Length: 193
Ligand code: AMP
Image (cartoon, rainbow, N blue to C red; front, side, top):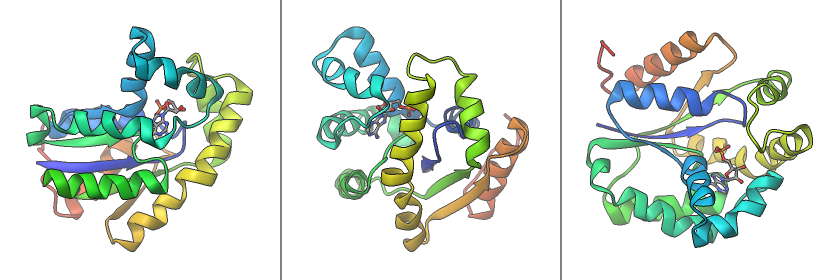
């Protein structure tokens, strides 16, 4: 059982690593970006409201995500734990999440931060080819990250719940570093995939 929050700039390989680590720990990978993209594709009320922000590389307003994340964390599969990827992304979201998790009786164990230098990020994002991965949108997303999301590193550090991992390595080594950090923090990591 583990409840984990994944932080890191866009292009850090957060989504890929989140998926691998969640599978390894046997917990659901909850990506707010994936949920939102699904809502956009289905043209739900949330999707219609979120689309324009996403296309611009802007953050979807905090209030639009609150019901969505609460609904997701109330699904039965979260009893085994979860890995949150892409949420929280602002300080108000982090504060909301703290309140929601105490309400649900699901305190998080650790926040993980994947550190990657700026030069690596733009190159990785450009090679990904997603519809919101054009260069001006990427630059905007990095700026939004610096302004709004990077302060979360301090937020979790102050709570002594932050684990920092070097994301600027080969994919397998990043996974290994993440699992080692979790295990060193006392979380149980199954030895075979
Ligand atoms: P991601 O797949 O995590 O890169 O998210 C893709 C896009 O979805 C972001 O650029 C935002 O527009 C939106 N998004 C995802 N998660 C959040 C969040 N926690 N807060 C605001 N917007 C979000």
